[in-house]
Image 1 (cartoon, rainbow, N blue to C red):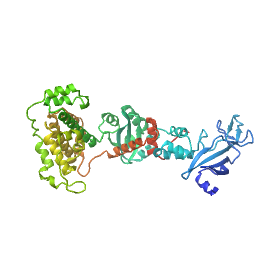
Image 2 (cartoon, rainbow, N blue to C red):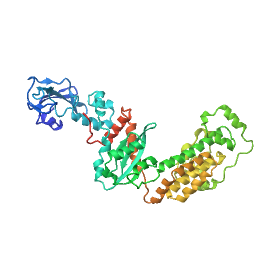
Image 3 (tube, rainbow, N blue to C red):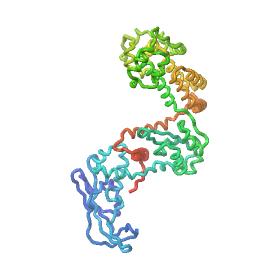
Image 4 (tube, one colour):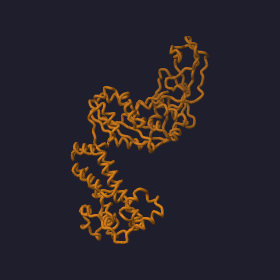
Length: 495
């Protein structure tokens, strides 16, 4: 049973000016008939007080105004009774307007807030079903969210800070369509979203939206190894934090191993070929090689014994794996039962590829995996490039973990002197990011290591919003959804 005192507390209306004439329930709707309590109103044209009515009738608005949900399956609508006035000053005729309704009389301001709070985790279909409103009305609300609000909300907080640490990073909206985000370390919040990653866009945010008072407070910044961001932020701060993002380096090292492994498997699939022909395989993918190319490579294959593996990294790899201490008869499966270990054949290796086996760190390998990877090195890695690339990758991981710059220099020289052109490209990667790696190693300790986990975590949250993309297909709507995600309070909407 509905009672009027209950609704007075939840409707959030100004009861000094509004009067409820009647309320009733109709299907899944609770409708309130409302009128203005006083006899005067404000003229929308000259903004003067007006008390002269054009007629004495109460005109019913031609549509119900959605106001707020009531429970899970009911919606409160307002049926507005309006009077018709004529201004004595400017002679304008108009209907009176309530404080809680929008300019177009379609929805109330309370309804706006509910849409803002629920859009970022509820789909448009669910919103229209829950609020019993068309999708076009919801879209019109979301399209009015101010895009600059997310860049302005934290300005007052930044002004109160003694020091500001800025983190700048980008992520992809769709393909090469990038978005730049700026975070602050001390507040642990996203303070800006820029719709493109050019230097001009970042300069515009620094000099037009970031107050000049905050420029002197920017003590440190990190740009994730981007020289254009450094050039922009370096004008207001001379102390950049240049540490390397270890994830990108690990990813690049894994790509080297993956590329060398593909070439080795393609070489096995076409029988063994000469060393010069191995480099030809790297120029095109295996799926694009024609039968004529296979015949040409097979005509150049050697009839002698298999080429012996390179001994340069063999001893070091055997020392890492320590397979001599493993007894295959004592191996246990996932159910802790004794299992029979069987060596793989060449055809099975070509079919399965064992990609994840080469991506894992050696310290995380099980005994079965150590035996398996040792057999691959022993029987299927004829030229030893696969063993060389994986050993360099593991040495590089250990050097970053141990903060050993001398080991980084040694790995760089070994990659330069390698006979495989893809391993030589890893030397260029280390050379390009050398000063960032050096800064990271010199300023980090074993107890404290610099990390950009904050920026990457904000990036991940943004990507989560993108994956649950309930009916947005443009970058502007995506940024509006980020605004609704990270700035729940005081969203500025133009009504």
